[in-house]
Length: 177
Image (cartoon, rainbow, N blue to C red; front, side, top):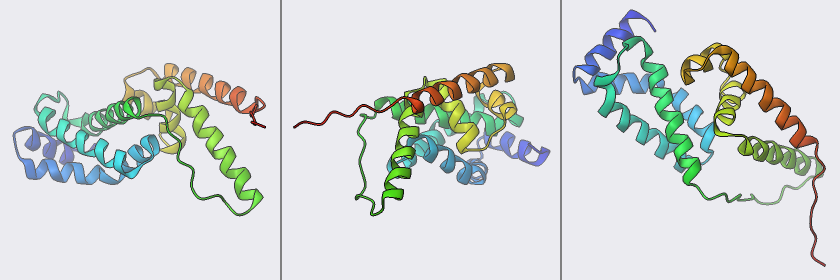
């Protein structure tokens, strides 16, 4: 974060709501992308972002280091997304059936991967989404989640192994008949 942004954060901490809005708007696209990758639906994404902004606005005066504003804001967003995921009923809505076998196959593989990621423990699921869907480095994830880089690497490695094992298992389907 540059000194100019740190000054803006200090002004927001002092009660300048216009500056706070400016700071949040500068991160809006990244926040949306992060929330969308975690909660998927536009409604849940909007809820997560709205709650994040509200909580951040109420708590900004307590932010100790202005330089960590972005990290702090994204940590709040991740927590909100995880809350929504915990509250949400596990219902998979299928779109209209695809028309070609190839599309069906890739759609099924995508659903399998998403379901497998969804079964990971919360911290591993978050790390996988931050790394693969958001393109964050191990170092960035470590800073964001307040973990050591080696802890992030270990969890990422274990998550990949778990995902590989899950996706390699044959799918058993029950057919009533």
